[in-house]
Amino acid sequence: MKCNVGGIDRTARIVLGIVLLIVGLAAPIDTTWRIVALVIAAIALVTATVRFCPANAILGINTCEGKGKK
Image (cartoon, rainbow, N blue to C red; front, side, top):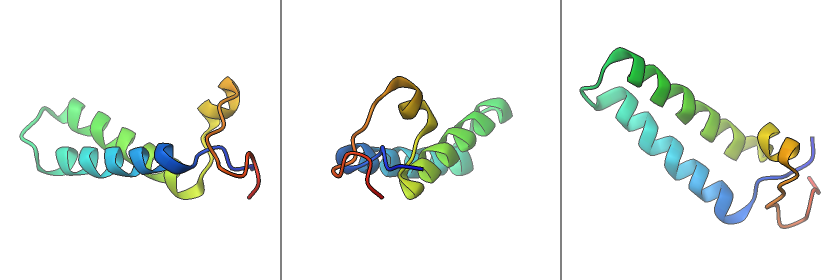
């Protein structure tokens, strides 16, 4: 897999993932919304960690500084 997540995109995914993780674990929300928040948090954190996003690949988006180098 080539890198297609980098820079500000990666930072935004990490911040979003942490915020949604906190919301999913601590906020007094309905179970359905809790699961949605935790799933989106997991996706954001995993894609930021591995620096590859399948949706970016399908849409042809590449924010990696090396333009696809791993």
